[in-house]
Length: 184
Image (tube, rainbow, N blue to C red):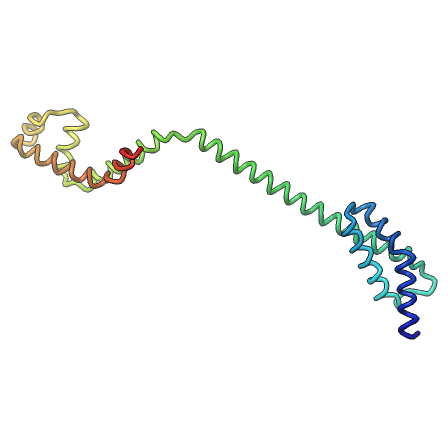
């Protein structure tokens, strides 16, 4: 057959069945543009493979079968995408619920207290042993300078020196924290 005869056959097939094929696909797809694409792809698939079919083949039924499979593939793809979207949505809901619960349980006062205590512990670790002991007796055991001086056999001025040294280390270690407290 020559090219013009083939073109006429294709044009006749297209003119006679295109609308039916699109309506068939759209019945399942419910999207006119996608149904149009599927119908055209099915016609093109038939046209490319027409020489592999017997002369007794029912061409419109063959193309409808191709459309059916393309619609099934499309709908399965949509179902997989929706399943993934649902899974992602549920995951995001769990993440957001966790964030909400975490924020509701958050006590900024406690966070600052814990952070400050950690900084104080670090500052105490930086102090010489005797300075740390004197500072802890003064601040944690509420001992007077006189009592501390007697305990270590020091003068009250020496105790004042150690306390001053400890406070200097603490001020240095807590400088950012103190600025934040003053800001708030």
